[in-house]
Length: 143
Image (cartoon, rainbow, N blue to C red; front, side):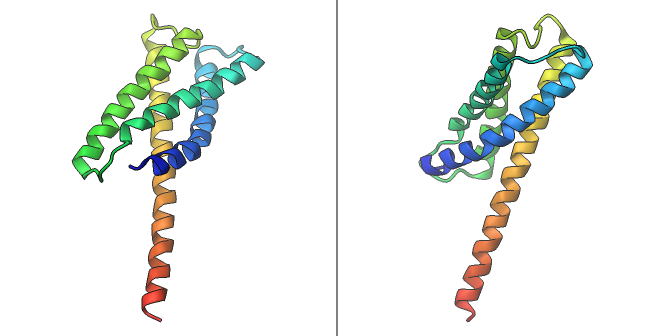
């Protein structure tokens, strides 16, 4: 993926990630901390968490087109790095106790759900763009 494409993807996915984090935190707190309340600092941390979740996209940076196997390997590495980064920040801010396997499991499950949501939203957007480009090419060459 070229740098321009990567930056565009990161900006677009930032908002999906932010939404996913908010939904995940809501569900997580319903399960473990139903009396929790959030401060202005927490909102800033949510935005920092979204940014931290966006930065590992640099794993997809490449000068040449990646084949399917290379892309799959990078996606697996990306998910592992992403999970580690987010778990680090969540534990740093006392959102997740690393001593509670339940909390860690629910947190990592939430990360996986957001990861899949971002993937599906990005894939859908790319497919719509590809379909639109193909339609215009067909109109141009068949007119």
